[in-house]
Length: 368
Image (tube, rainbow, N blue to C red; front, side, top):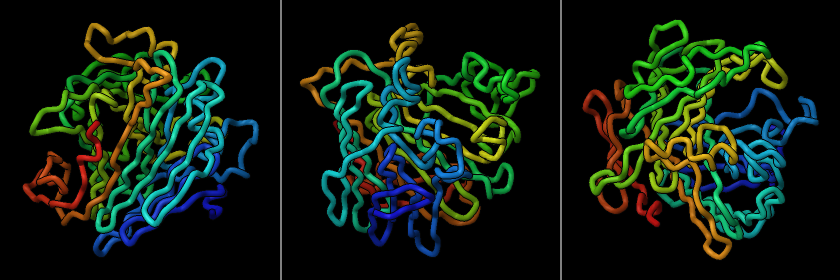
């Protein structure tokens, strides 16, 4: 183990990828992808270290970084925000040159969750798996990757997703004006194009370009289109102006929606203090926004055919895989237009100007 950004952390390395996971809270980060001619470190580390902030805060905020598992997503009345999986200690199980296995018994849900991070020689990718066992009833959940675009010139990072049925801004005030917080998007407004989302003043804004809308924190949710034979997985992607694309692949059946947490200095309270700038959460969820398990169980999107929770059985473990990866791209690659299979062990990433790269990736890892 190593202490990284103030947190004792497990580490895993290959020639293509280096990653760290905090022992407390199980947060992934930092991560470095060793791309051809480029070192890419897209994941966020909070602008504070654990010892610098009020120790009464939940571990979620103390160790905030990279990516973490949320069960339940948003939390519940008698548990920490985003659950023990995002706050409590993870126990070491085993490690090889290419995989790291951690486990946690949740005191809030009763679930046993096994976290496995795997790397493959030659692949600039993290194969991430959570297996949830001993859990009973309806629960919401999600993964919570946060990227750091604070050093990127305004509007120069390009955000894209696979096709979605519709999007919606958070239904209430995501940023609390009574606490001095600020959000710019119109609550509960729906849209079908990320380039035209309604603001509170009636204007529209382009959510495909970031950083943007300084001084605001906002949340939206996209309902992903179902998988097809030609598009067997859903994806999110960010083109960094440094010359690479970060992307994430998932099963829509496991994670039917994607949240964008657009965090750009809209929170003045501790520990944020308007210094959490240019951060972008691209969160894959089965949830109703970040509203917690009780609201998720209300099935508020049933008329739209969108599940916000899932039935678990104690004797039926559930596997939730994700792939997070990076690929070098040339100048002018622009916004990602598609990510599609290019054979059983590779994907093709197409940019808006017709450039394309094919990279090795075991996308079959996502299959149930």
